[in-house]
Image 1 (cartoon, rainbow, N blue to C red):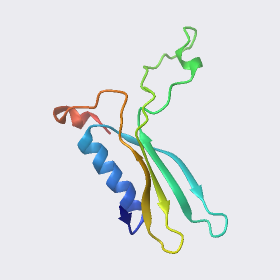
Image 2: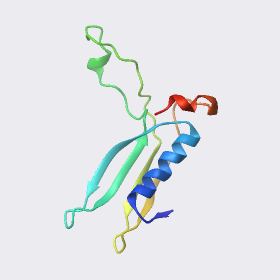
Image 3: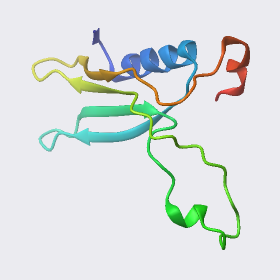
Image 4: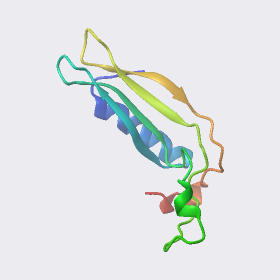
Length: 109
């Protein structure tokens, strides 16, 4: 897919996530050194990765729930060199956790 602006690509993935039943978060951004334009933008499932071990230890003052499940779902938007358009460079739709049901999507951000 091709997007005229980066925001259109981000909006596309956020809408897809809402309909599918998961939340997203920005993972990383890379800029070109020549002109400072964003060349790659990575958005991932909100449950990507794992929580650091100090937060899980018993002597921690504030225990937090485990919210990271090591999910692999992500999208990478890439700037086309000769144009100011963005394309989906990579897309992984597999999740390692259950998605929210349509009745409970109002609990997502």
